[in-house]
Image (tube, rainbow, N blue to C red):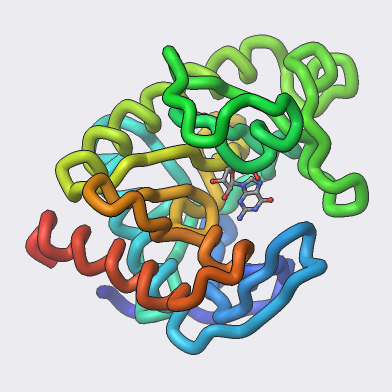
Length: 243
Ligand code: 5GP
């Protein structure tokens, strides 16, 4: 951990994070909150320690991705609940990568829950709380100016590489990477980069042996011991990386 940057103006407060300006215009300070939401914030709770776990897990995974060639907005973790990231203009397209069918895919298409997909499925959603992040296709994003053709192709390629790297890492931790959501942004020089967070709030993780859910589905489905699942993910990452 390194020196704490100046905590400037609150620029944005989301469901799980607050974003502050710093004295460096290229960098922002992210504070991970203890709040948990699901179903577009219809279900809410607060879990002491959740923000700290997600800050640590996300920092660890962003560092792992950067070390393996996936440039992203993460700069450094500064304390238990804060990390510094590059300032980005977020592209309003959420990208979901799926290795196993579950969640909204099963609800939408009626396919078998737990079905192993023959290749990773990449889906796009329009990032809009008001509309409930509706599923879109590539051409919607281009037509309405949310991202251009080249950016979307680049985003898809990065998503598949992130999936390869994370699935491989979690496999070594005894965990199946079921699916996850990524967000992207453009930095001040217009460079496209992975942003937001990678944590049990945004990924589905199943234990390889027991098939226990180790992610936010424990909250969504009232399975109990949400924090225990997040702690388990962090403990296995710590063991693996010797942190
Ligand atoms: P589903 O579309 O099945 O609900 O979610 C697919 C994956 O994307 C899950 O890992 C889920 O956690 C993640 N995901 C999708 N949309 C959101 C969102 O708006 N917020 C968060 N935190 N995760 C999301």
